[in-house]
Length: 185
Image (cartoon, rainbow, N blue to C red):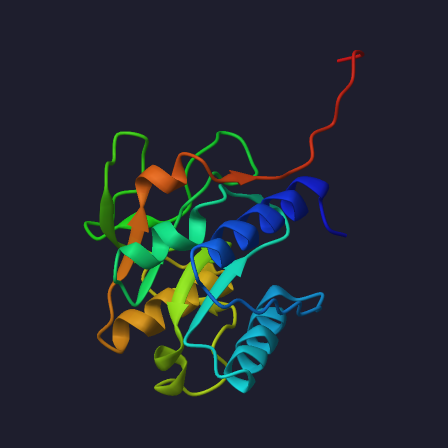
């Protein structure tokens, strides 16, 4: 299923990026497991010889200038954070000091872990990694199961790369979820 609001965001992003001179290809990877879908997208991106891969999940809404904004930072891995789809609402990921992202954060800040639903990655990073690029994992320190994006974040940092979060863009990225509406409770 593709949300209408996601598709409208994607159309606007592509129109704006093409008008700015970017050459863009869209890859749609289908898998019931997110990590598998991301790995398929990386494979397709590498086959097209893309210099950059931008992950935009189908449950996201993002501004038309997302590509230009992320590219302007000149970082190998940069993206936006967004709220989890559970209450209480909180941004996904952490700053370099381990503190969760917050509305008080400004500018482009270094991160330890980033969500991958709006994440720009230089293709060269995948050339330095062994497959799979994404998979779920386990954090021995915290005892937490890691989503494929946090597992990827840890691998990227282990290779010596930095992760960056554009907090201004993050204020305009939305995560589409479901909510049960009722009047009987």
